[in-house]
Image (cartoon, rainbow, N blue to C red; front, side, top):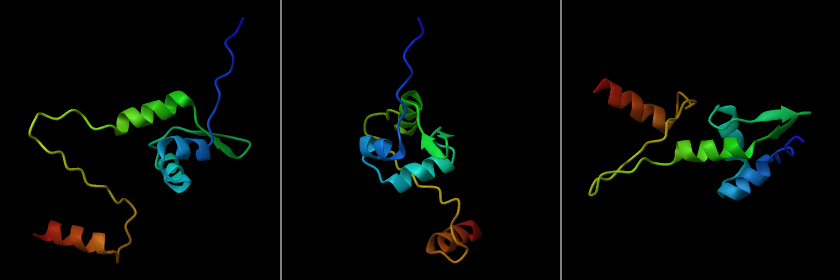
Length: 93
């Protein structure tokens, strides 16, 4: 006897579970961070892929007394954005 099919998740369900906006989940899919696939033009996420995404996003344990600071990567920053200006200034110095 075969295993029952895995219950697939929708973007709204993932957003609710992670307490994120649907837009954020969609961007994670489009950026390739969260594995998903389309069934008849609807995105679906396997629970194991969601768990892997969460695990990959979790910070590594740090040594006591050390603070970990991370910066978001803005891949598609507008050439006229404030972030782009700061990044260009930093590279020039």
